[in-house]
Image (cartoon, rainbow, N blue to C red):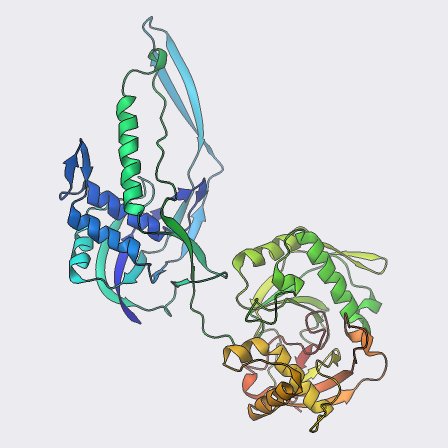
Length: 503
């Protein structure tokens, strides 16, 4: 927690109205709050006149300009629900000319959408000196609305603690990722708003008078400061460091049964590849990197990979299609995948076409199996990530499976501080690190072509398929999570399920 300047914005009617470029805002942005302070400074009791226009005093200008020069720490948002109307508002205007002729004309406009809020929004800035804090606190009492003129607000400024871990807290973040994108005032925003006000005042003053041809004058839109001296910034939830490669499990329904041959163990990878192609085709252009699987050298550069698996959560149940969503996938990328599923992508499996649907269940990837066990077993064989043997030192099939566990858990391991590398020296270090954390494996070589259990391999690659029993030790958060091993772990291969009895 940090001491901060807290700006508490409460909406007495429980409703916030604001929008940009015709789109409604879910939350008021820091730039909206800054504009409210500018308005209060220019229209409050301390303001002075300048060419028939009220302007802020120097003390108030400096206090509000301080908000521009210091980016906010974050905000605490209440539960919000956006509401919009399908109805149209009709406005009838009546004008009478000099001959007494009545003229009726009608305006049709849509009702403005709004956000229903369960409580106040609290914005946090770094703690300023007492003079700035006192001036901002005084200006806050003069603020009547935030956003539209009918979005009445009660604003208070206090000194307090900003706890980034509390529910609803969003902190300023760099780069691309999940969260809220909000506009933040930059140095020069105060002058931009004042200049826009002066121009609109001169324009309005020049056009006062009778309406055209004695008709009632229409509303004249006034140009504002738009987005001058502002920047779009991302605010995100400070979630605890993830210890699992997947965050969500999407259970995807399908219209008809999969062909029996496609669901046999040696065909699961090929069928998952067909599902992946259908998803990519449904998304079309600009497929998110977590779907394509091409996101650089690993999870810390991108967001990890989507996994496509077929599984029965319990014996006797129907086979289900699971999509594992990695953590930190931007909301827009998840929305693209969801939209693609809602469009009903068609999967070609042999001569049969199977249509997918929107997820019928979205849950935690840590809670996909009905029972929790200490040991796991592969349902589909894994193709080892590191087959062969090093030039120096021992390397067993069990070591290779433990190494594959490390590759599957790369994201959590890197986030915990393990530096990543390559080559046999690093693989040996990785296996020793995992064994120290309680990871153990027993592997059983699978006879027959290993190419059935992998999607793609380079010419000359050594492909080794194996079944395995695995204990994840400290890496296991509960024994019920979605996890797969091996080179096809994102496309139907190497699925692990809890082993009954924990053998």
